[in-house]
Length: 214
Ligand SMILES: Nc1ncnc2c1ncn2[C@@H]1O[C@H](COP(=O)(O)OP(=O)(O)O)[C@@H](O)[C@H]1O
Ligand SMILES: [Mg+2]
Image 1 (cartoon, protein in one colour):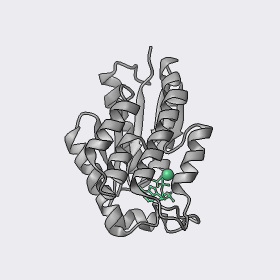
Image 2 (spheres, helix red, strand yellow):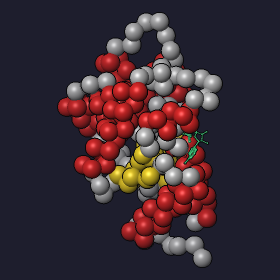
Image 3 (cartoon, rainbow, N blue to C red):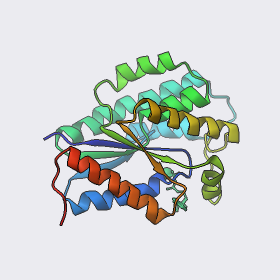
Image 4 (cartoon, rainbow, N blue to C red):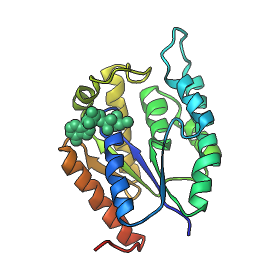
């Protein structure tokens, strides 16, 4: 049986990396085989492209260059990691995926949505996530959580207005595709967030007819 594809989305400090732990625990309790991955990146070449995208540099990075690099990394990630895993029956959990392109390169940078649609139809095609967990938290709280981070990358350093566009962009996508995108209130405590994620996964397991754990 083909595996399921779950993506995590949300702004910086929304708790995506933290949430992955609870998904991992949920999958292990059900003895579901899976891989964890992330974007931009996920394969050696795609991780090299990630460095190109996120590394702070003197030279201005044109919006189109950023968009194409993100999709170049994604093409490699899908072909060499995501598709082979799903075909082997593994579940794939990705920290960020296509929604981030619509939101960062589209809503926040002002990129043309039609162009992103075209790239998505070309690069992602049928490899759409089965479900997306959107961790939603205010920009202020998200930023407070990441201030301790040693390394701020090129996108972390964007303005508050940029990050607000990111948040609103994600919420708009959830509104457009409520069946796929599940909003998690990430302003709650870590335990409460993990609990909400487990509840969402339990509901999906029922819909997908996966046995429950005793
Ligand atoms: N619900 C939460 N409440 C308080 N702190 C949190 C919560 N979720 C995550 N954190 C903390 O905030 C920081 C950023 O979380 P992280 O999972 O790395 O976010 P992201 O991967 O979305 O950028 C980490 O130090 C993490 O421990
Ligand atoms: Mg993270």
